[in-house]
Image 1 (tube, helix red, strand yellow):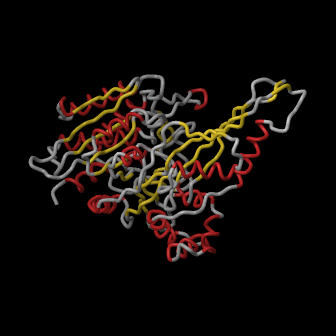
Image 2 (image 1 turned 30 degrees about the horizontal axis):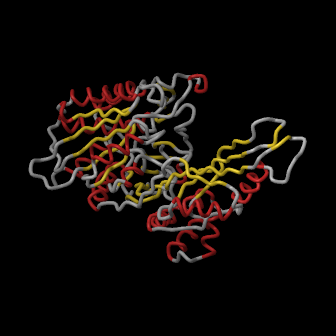
Image 3 (image 1 turned 135 degrees about the vertical axis):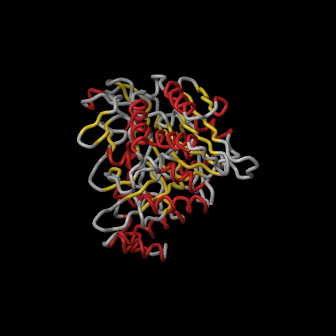
Length: 465
């Protein structure tokens, strides 16, 4: 799930990758990339269709054709899905720990009826590529794969081992990421294609580039009201639906306290100069003094900022009653929370109990939420990104941000592997690529412009200094 939503990138929420701004890749690179893209879009890698292993086999074949040995490639099955792991050996005797490159092969489902076109066929129309996954996250899969292939053909020997890690259920359970991360804890860090990226505001303003270094914890709770029920002709005071509704009313009125960490403050510091408004001024003031109540009030009024500064909980599903002529014996609401780093699932559960203020309610956590800390960006990653940005977006510097959504990075951080989102796409205003929605799209010029991202990054990171 790619939710590029930070103070630096918030204006890109309804944006798309920018048109070409850096030197275009070689014609043969574009030709091969487009052919591979068409092929991987055609795999319906959604839960229940069993297409992920077939896509992994295809990618493995392409990598073997570029010179990777069979023993360097592993397809690790898990039920109907799978993970692909490819090891690019480093120079002999290197003492440096491996670096992981992450992407996910699975996508959310899509229907031809809703799209008006086949979502499993790469379609070109008016300068856009259409197809499920063209952004989330098969473009990441493509660019990392192709970078490995190009470098191997050139005889490039990195100064440490590089490991390609493609998971198969990021959009659903995340189990492949959890299993793979547990076996790669010797890695120095992971670079994630499913988060981070650039923004070109236009109008002469300089571009920016954001690196994702933290994610909110994804946790879901079920809140249930119960009683013995009865006949609908004899209403009683303790109606389960009414009790639950009263609790949800209280929850809807509650706002978790604002919280800050160095990531959110750094994002504000980077964004403030680009905003000629009271919001930009409030950001500057808050960075200078996080206790500035007036500045905080200004930012609180902006929903896209407010949600980044706190834990959020919202009711998303309801289930109640068993017959139209019977009093409900139970009513359950599903409440989805995105928890600010540093706050625990247990603390949020306690807050829900306090806010709903009814000790007869049952509040349970569903699944097994995973908490993770903020990742420190290694200096060598920042330096390598600056080298890449000098080519792709002169004037841009890497700035960290926190993700409101969730990616596979969550599981790698939880396994003790610092994970940095360094996506290959740049965004511009006014074009919506609508990933997860109908007619997901990617400007063709943006497709071309991002093809060198990981190729350049790996050379800068693991090549000769």
